[in-house]
Length: 248
Length: 318
Image (tube, rainbow over all chains, first blue to last red; front, side, top):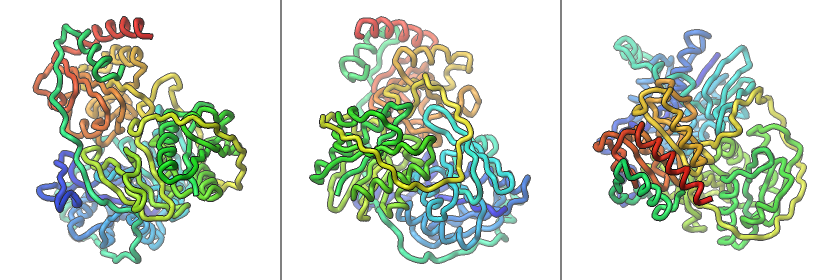
């Protein structure tokens, strides 16, 4: 089984979010980058397929040279080879188009991406990729088993979950649940050493493919100070929620 | 030219998110000087959509179970039939599943998590949340057909009463090798996605056996229950209740956080909620800086009192 894991290079979840150039660009100053958490759950599940079902696992990312440490980390965790599409990830459609071109080339059976990146939160790359490849598609995926060319996936729905039976080739929008937080792997020294020798191929994108772009950014208005209510004055809280906030 | 909204229903009842999407669609249609058409699956009744400004309803009756690809194909064919230049969906799990498939089908640019009506029609610019609610991004969609995913509880419901004409629509739909084999869903519970109030609790509750009062408070308020990341990691509550950056986003009118300190990742996930109430023993908990109302106190004393007082309040105000 050939498996491709799509990796987005995103600011660490604790990052302070600021903008520059008249609020038109994300301020990368002092920001630590990580593998997008939703992708990391998928990568860890891919390691399980590699170890138990002899899958080969490639990782891919769309971005400039600055994203390579993130791909190297994925290699150190255990992926076999990495591909970097040398282009700016202008929007979800751009990323999906470039990933689809690479995926066709590699003839993958299973492609796992995160359900969304934690920076732009578009939530569109896995679905667009599936549509472009005419592959099966399950998003918000919290469990995945492969048996030959059949797959069983569990999808989180509003208020519950559903079990889906489908076939390969398959694109997954993954999230926590594919593996548990405690299953995530920290690269060890041997993994890091081996990652340096693993192939990281840089490919140039075919054509420009953006359909949307970010014009400007805004930060939420700062909120007023919290109104504290005494613990023995619950009536006051109910009064504020009813008469002032008008939410009950 | 028209605006098309996909109005999702559950067991014959339109979801609130679908009515909000219709309200949004009406605002766009008015700005563009055109009509609002809705696409439904298995709807028998359309008058509720008329209340929110839908003039025509295309209903597909030939599909029994939800399938994202088949639904996307149905919506695509409706958009083509109506010459829709803007297609609106809600932020429900199913709509988010469908939207990117539809975008490729219609060669349409797609903006998700949109929180306000377009600030400009030409160029077409919408405001969406990004960086998990830590910022907004004004996004231009440059394709001829545009798809908008409207965030829950952002635009709100807006009544624009008209008469919605119900029309049967029977396009030839694609087939799919994907089937749902089982659904595990509590039908009597309010979901986080649909809730106007969410009651959430964290490690301050000390153990899963203490969630009775959280559920009771949620019951009194008609709220959904949620939890912090450590609580779901510890297995005290199911993952589906985990809200925050790597869990579910919450955009409700009222979010009550009990025994949650307020890590930056949690706050990001709930930032779009309008009113936040925090109950915590630690006055230094970061959540107090992000909340509108707060009680410094022991949840085990405050919550039962709050339940009791709310019951009285509800009895008097219903």
